[in-house]
Amino acid sequence: MNSKFWQQKRVLITGGCGFVGRWVARALHPAEVDLHILDLAPSNHLDEKHTFHRTNLCDLTATRELIGSLRPAAIIHLAGQPGVASSHDNPVGAYEANVLATFNLLEACRQQGGVEAIVAVSSNHVYGEQHHQPTPEDAPLNGDGMYAVSKLAGDVLARAYGKTYGLPVGIARMTNSFGGDDHHLAHIITATILSTLKNQRPVIKQSGRDRKGYLYIKDTAQGLLAVAEGVAGSRDLHGDAFNLVPNEVLPVTDLVRAILAAVGSKLEPEILNPTAAFEVEHLDNSKARELLGWTPQFDLPAGLAETIAWYRSHGHG
Ligand SMILES: NC(=O)c1ccc[n+]([C@@H]2O[C@H](COP(=O)([O-])OP(=O)(O)OC[C@H]3O[C@@H](n4cnc5c(N)ncnc54)[C@H](O)[C@@H]3O)[C@@H](O)[C@H]2O)c1
Image (cartoon, rainbow, N blue to C red; front, side, top):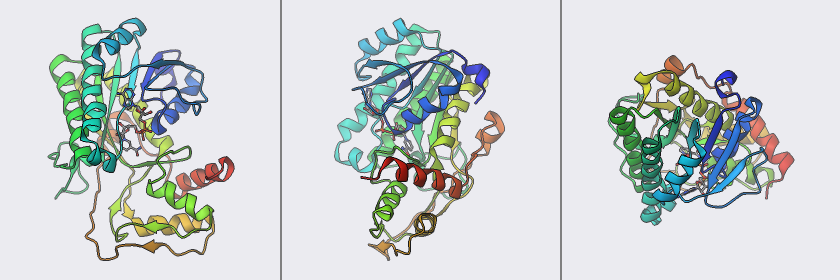
């Protein structure tokens, strides 16, 4: 983080009561920003000093009024419905949270003017099946599930506002983030750590051969701030997307075994569907490294060590 850029800026985090938002708030702490959190309901998890705004981004009038009165310098837009299964089961919710809310925020910012940087949070899922790996940002967006498509719609809306209106918005295509304080208990790393600490066998739902990248949440937070700094500093980057992903990918089985070893457990994972088809997802982070100067600071063992320490000290359900 370039502390000078953030020093005492007014920053709005939408969806700031969620998992990623809480870590972005922590990352901003050293810069002593004027922190504003927008969400549907307040959370008692937020430890950073902030002003809370109970606003539903699906309401354009309320969103416009808030942006107009607050006039934030930077917005990290994290409000959304992050679940693949929940989006499949509730497509209306996925549309409202991932498409309409993003549209309203961008439109409110366009109408009100004055924002220096907006980060719209997209997802690795927008890529879907790819032939070229590691996959760069200009690859076709082949995602076809309801979560993928709802994020894809928010992603290309942000591109349109950046490229057409010159709105200073950057798109962060983030992969699965992990870390302490994660309320998504089905996330593979969170679920595996929690069951291992309770001395219960971790469960791998598919074959364990899927290969993906997992980004430690402190690197995710720094990446989001780097996207904001990038679009604030260069008109050419308005509407651009950046893969915020780790350097390496690995099979789920290796990930689970790494967690078991880090906890010091002799348990064996239970693999529910050993013959299931598997996917390889390897996204390229060189654009973010070259244009934003962002690079992950935590390799997997370092991120896991901090995460396990968090759950050991904060309890594990
Ligand atoms: N967690 C990950 O690993 C991951 C990976 C890729 C992308 N993402 C994206 O990052 C964002 C944040 O993820 P998260 O894990 O922190 O999710 P989360 O569910 O923990 O937090 C999202 C927050 O958004 C709020 N929200 C939803 N609809 C809203 C609305 N209409 N108005 C105001 N607030 C609203 C929710 O109340 C919630 O607090 C999501 O957009 C998700 O799609 C997350």
